[in-house]
Image 1: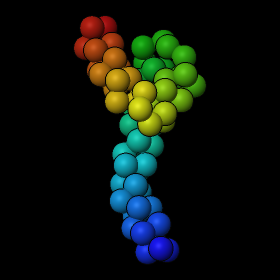
Image 2: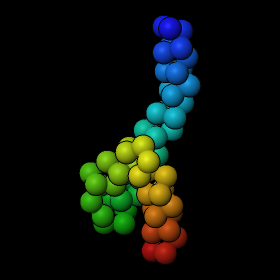
Image 3: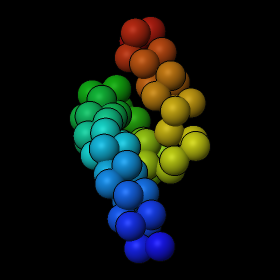
Image 4: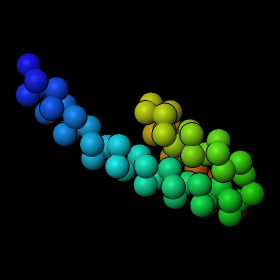
Length: 64
């Protein structure tokens, strides 16, 4: 049973790493676009919301 938990953690670790790097990048992007940095970082870290927020952030960066 412990091996299943450890295996799930190892599979989840790359996703968390990608989420954190995108959150940092979106923080810099929010500062450049004069948006609220804390809100953009938090929305980048929420697991289901972040995929839709990445699309929104990409749209905002291209339209400005």
